Image (cartoon, rainbow, N blue to C red):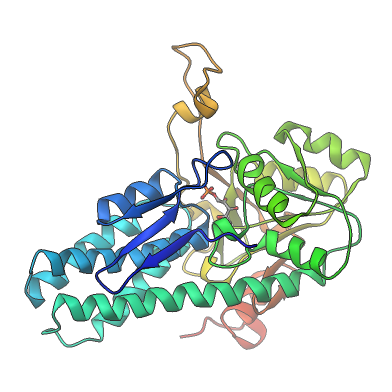
Length: 360
Ligand code: MRU
């Protein structure tokens, strides 16, 4: 069974529930988010995480904001101002994955189109329809990414990093959907998951998803990847993305860049899988992507256990940027971008013939 990361409960003045990923794999518990601070906290603490999933949670977060305005009996003008202010809090909860701001802005556009006298309940109803549309679309995009990617995966073992499955999206996942689609088509191969320090998304979440699905998985320390690649047991690496710029540079979980260099050094193809909502064509190169820095405690006290002495400092960027030249192909819902260059990205993602100029 494919797990779900978020769900909406009841009608437009209902609430958001999040499968608390910080508790996995030990416990499977749903967390009710009835106000915007709870939604923001869940996103910041990685209770819900993964670029598409935080976009979906952000969309539902706006419904929660409109619900607050209904409960506080705000009039149309104040209700709208309240939603707009809350929208900014949600959009900035995490800076790197562009899907979050993308989803919030998409929801704001639908309420922009409503008459100014629309009461908060009207905003909530319209926002819920849009948030559900984003969620449903993501499910379909994941299936398309799985289909498109499984066709390009060479025979042999696959190595992935972080978690890019159902927990990170609204459907079957991105990179993990490619792996599971290939497996479901009858192909058999070894699946390797980097543990993904410091928060262990690979060990805790990817391995959990694969075990749930009955797909054998081998977890390795991030530092074992070079040796694994040297053994020849890996035919391809495939990872997700948090933001891809116009030239194909890709931000993803910290450690991805190192893995791409290792794959290149060993002549192993390195693929990225992401929906078009992860592309930020307003940025030219990866140097412009904001990289989230997280707390020292995540590094110094992994899983709550002291791993370094008191007094030590920590460097804890949550993401890094892999240059386009190290990426063999980007799997999207529209097809595979290969080679990874500005022209192909514009053609596939923005539908610009020959990538001549950005779509309007
Ligand atoms: O910090 P996280 O766990 O939200 O980081 C997630 C990743 O880096 C994923 O690889 C990325 O969001 C793609 S998810 C389909």
